[in-house]
Every structure is written in structure tokens, then in C-alpha cells.
Image 1 (cartoon, helix red, strand yellow):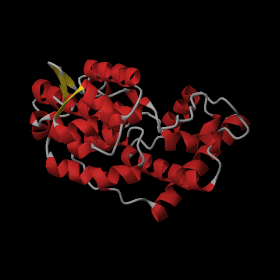
Image 2: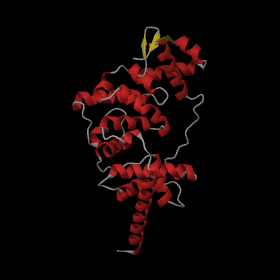
Image 3: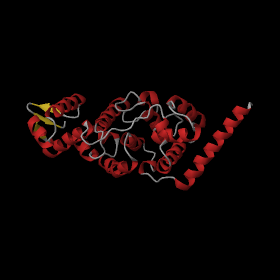
Image 4: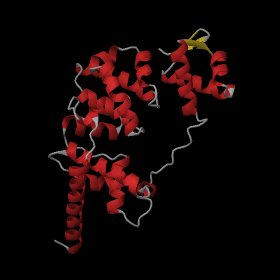
Length: 276
């Protein structure tokens, strides 16, 4: 064994021990970690996309109480789903989750696929989310990164580097993965990454893929949320009423209404818009 290889292997072992030691003392008690129900884990993974854990905690249990299984979610009116989802933002996720539930019910008799390849074909599920579902719902070894995991690997293995490519990180994730218990290993990584976020300057700024989130105030995201809020309150509204209620630029609102209609978030019937 070369010196470089031996040094690297020792660093990996030290890294794994550091992560496990921290997790044993400081692991977070999160509701979706207290279940192995694949459907509940599917819901949590949709909710956690681009959303802080504390915000998801407030909605997760309310959501699975309202829709306790894949069949109830697939049959629920989108309006009801959205009324509970309200406050999490990125509302397309709620629509994709419903469409996902419908496809799983129709194509897989309600059983969530255990393959990343099959999961990636479902609405709203990308490569990382598919791998996360496989790891957390079925405790199968799969390789993925998300914000906290990326932060941990950059901090430990890329000190002094800039523009770190996710492909480099994924190789290390695969090398260090605890294949007998990937579920707990990923929990441990995420908890360590969550701690790092509070303790040091964000290592993710060194990522080649880092993008600072744009301001929410006045953004299309904010206007989309305002439109859905109005339609939840009023059931249906004309274009002019929506523009009047929002007090935003009419051309911008009109453009967003058209886009939301294309996405299936809202429908137009005659001169009014409504949530389908």
C-alpha cells in the first residue's frame, strides 16, 4: 500500500469515527426518522426539498394525519392538499406529490418502488431524491448528496479548495458509505452538516454548484404564493380581481398566471381562475 493510499484510508476512518461519535451524542429527533413507512418517508422527502427542517416539522404530521396512505393522497382534491401544504412554499411540489401518488397507485398497486431508476420516472423525483428514498425508506445503499452532506465533505476533504465539483464529492460519499446501515449513516452526516452550518462559515460556498438564493420579497415565487392564497380563500377569481388583490404589476401577474396554468397549479374556466 502506498503512503498516499494509507494516509487517505486513515483519514476516511477518522472521518467516519468523527461523524458517528457526534451522532451518538447529538442526533436529532425528527418525526420522519421515527418511521420506516415508505409513504411517510416519500412525503418528508418532497417537503424537505429546498425547505428548512423546522418548517417541515410543523407540516409533516399534519399532512400524514390528513392523508395517511398513498391511496388517500392520490384521491384527495388538490385544493385540500394545497390548503395543508400552504406555508411550505414551492407549491409545485404539492402537485407533483399528488401526481406521484396517483402514478404509484395506478402503476404499482400503491407500493412505492425500491429502485432509483423507477423512482426517477415519477413526477417531482430527481436523482438525489430517488436515492434518498431508497436509503431512508428501504435502508438500501445508494449514493446522493444534499446541502448538509455537501457541507460535511467539503469541510473534511477539500480544505483550501475552491470550485469543488459534486462529482468529486459523490466519489467520497460512495467510498465512505456504511453499506449495512445507510439510513443511519446519512442521518449522521446530515446532523453533522446541520451543526457545521451554525458553527462555521458555510463551506458550500466553495461548491462549483453554489447559488445564493434570490430575495423572496417581490419575486415570482412570492407572487405565485399570493395567487394561490387568494384562490384558496375565494375559490375562484377573475384576472382583474387577482391583480387588484395582489397590487402587483399587471403584466407580471398575467405572465405568472399563464405559467401556473400550464403547470396545472391553477385552471381557467371562462373568465375565472381556480385551483383544480
